[in-house]
Image (cartoon, rainbow, N blue to C red; front, top):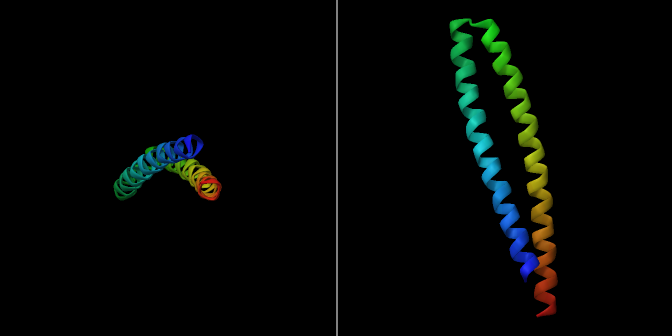
Length: 83
């Protein structure tokens, strides 16, 4: 049961990262739109690069979260069977 608890804790930490990054991404996309409206091309390009990196990091965190979910389910089933 300890390994299950550890897996759930790790998954919750990943979820926190995921939610934080999603919030930051939304904030950056709002700034991106404002810069586009103001036609601030240099700052816009820099922000677009940052957004692309954040989206890639978000994809990676989603992948980790999915793997953790599978591991939590597998561990829970093992614990349930052995009890």
